[in-house]
Amino acid sequence: MRLLPSLLLGFFTSVNGPAGEAPAEPLADGMTRSAIAEIDQAIGIALAPKVAKFDASLDTPKRLVTTGGRVIYLPNGCRTVSRPFDLLVHFHGAPTVLEPTFERSDIDGVLVILNLGIGSGRYDEAFRYPGSFDALLTRTSASLHELCPNAVSKPARVALSAWSAGYGAVFRILDHDKDARRIDAVLLADGLHANFEPGGVDEHRIETEQMAPFVTFADEAVSGKKLFAITHSSILTPYASTTQTSDFLLAQENVERVPATIAPPRPGMVPETRADAGNFHVMGFAGDNEQAHCDHLHAFGDTLLPYLKQRWH
Image 1 (cartoon, rainbow, N blue to C red):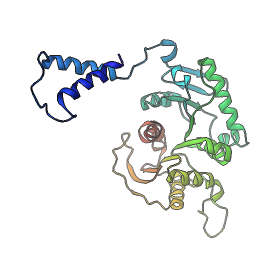
Image 2 (tube, rainbow, N blue to C red; image 1 turned 90 degrees about the horizontal axis):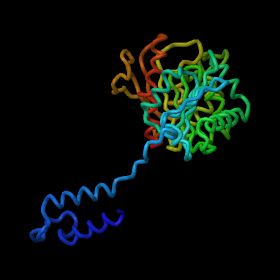
Image 3 (cartoon, rainbow, N blue to C red; image 1 turned 180 degrees about the vertical axis):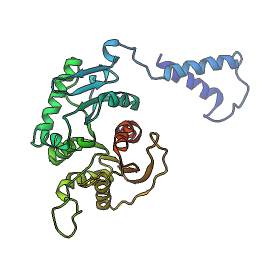
């Protein structure tokens, strides 16, 4: 069958001349328009990529809830992990929201969801020590082999995402150089906070040490080496708000905000500003209440996942 396209294309080159030129003379006897149409169809079929037959053991979505509270979700089944796969680890967020969101994104990868409780301190503490993230990946690989015995051992690319307090885990992972090097993308939904420096003339000076891992990652994103995308609300907090931390990063990268022109991703979720440089993106929204904060989780698939899909596809 592979010979058919080249033979037929060779025939048309000899009859019609170079591609794009009109025939120099009438079609040969017996070559009717309908016959040519059939040959065109045969060429198209021969050149079309072969689609693997659906296999319930490979293509059926897989889901596992581990004893440690991790949720592992493969929307496209075991075929995804039969080769080097992409992995998104999300911290803090309801699986009932995140799983269908990830499925709709059409990212052919693995989603891991980890919820450790209220407050960023729990996430910070869980990944405070070197090797903590390695341990998470090792446990994830073991769970994937439980779901899919033929799964490969390690992911090809790893992204981190977080909503609200989950940023504490992202901070600690990026704070370890070895872990930070293996992270390809970071997506933060209304969740980047920091402390203010104590006392002094300016009590609203953000602690640079807490922001340092994010600044380094933003540097790499601006240069195109990594992806870093942030959404934030306009909620005021006694510590550095998500607006203030975003402003801090933009100042470090010398990137200015411009008025946002995108459509609201959810009713009542009003885009106000955006800033883009390389693969570094910040989107600011109105809203200063609990509902506005929760909207960033529910809009995750419309605001942040498209950046990851574009990078990984």
